[in-house]
Image 1 (tube, rainbow, N blue to C red):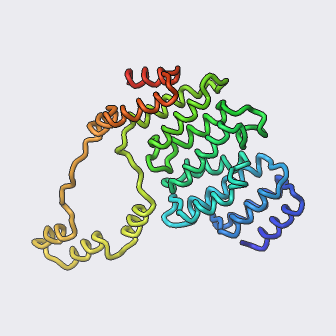
Image 2: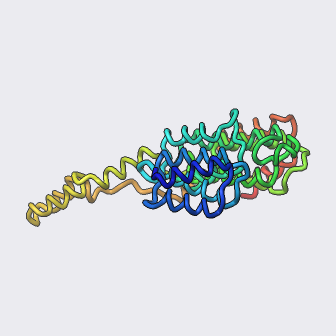
Image 3: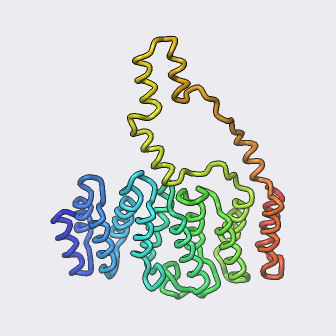
Amino acid sequence: MTLHFRALAAQTAEDSAISANEILALRRAAWPDGKIDPEEAEAIFILNDQIAEPTAEWSDFFIEALVEFVVNTTEPRGYVSDDNARWLIERVRHNGRVESLTELELLVRILEKAQATPESLRTFVLDQLERAVLTGEGPTRDGGELAAGRITSAECALIRRTIFASGGDRPAAVSRAEAEMLFRLKDATLDADNASEWERLFVQGVGNYLQGWQGAKGLSRDRAAELEAFMDDRSSNLGRFFRRMATTNVNGLAQAARDVGFGKRQPSRDPSAEAAQDHAVTDTEKLWLDARIDANDKVDALDEALLRFLEQA
C-alpha cells in the first residue's frame, strides 16, 4: 500500500464520507500497477464500514477493486482461492449476515467474474438470499419494511445471477442443492404477493437442474493451476519434443513424437448424445421431484407450471 493511499484512506475514515474526487484519487493510488494488494483490500473494506452514506461512485469502486483482488490476486488468475473466499465471507458477515446491498452485489459479481470459486461462497450468498425471503430482513429488504414470506424482484434477479454464475460446481447450471432451495422458497411463499419473475425463475431453475447438460463443466482451481504449471514448465512434453527434434534424424522423428504422447487418439465425445441423455429425467430425478412436490401435501400452481415445462421441453 502506498503512503498516498494510506493517507487518503485515513482522511476518509475520519470524515465518515467520501467525495467523487477522493474516490478518483483512491482509484489512481490503488491501481498504478493494475493490482490490489491485501493491505489495500483490507483498507477498502474498513473505509466501506466507516462511510455513513455510500455513493454510487463509491459502491462502483468498492466492487471493482475487491473483485480484482479476490478473483485475480492469486494464481491461477480467475480462480478464487479457499483463503480468499474465507476472508471475504468473514469480512462481509455482520452478526451472521450480510447487511449491505453493495456487499451482496460484490459477492454475486465475484461469482459471475470468476472461472471457479469454492462452493462455500455460492452457498453463503444463497443462504443470505433465502434468509431475507424467510425473515423479511436483509439488504434486499429496504430496512425490513417488506414482509417475510414473499420474494421480491431484487431477490429474483440476485438468485438467478447466482445459480447461473460461472463460478460454481456446475458453471451456468443449477445444482441439486440450489434446486432444493428453490423448492423451499416456493413452499414458504405460496399465495404471497411475489414478484412476477418468480414463477419463471423457479421453473427454469429446477428445470435446468433436471434437464440441463452437465458436460460443459468448468475446470477446478487445482486443475487450472496444474495446466498453467504445465505450460510454464520448460521440461514439458512439448519442450522435450522440440529438443528431440533438434537432435534426431528424420527416421527418428516419428519415434520422438510417440515418446512424448503426440499422435495418440483421444476417446471421442458426442456432446449431442450427452446432452440428450442429461435432458431425460431419470428415475432417481423423478423420485427426487416427487418428494419435493409432496413436501407441502399438494400440487400447487408452481408445481403445475414446472410439470408442464418438463413435459413440453
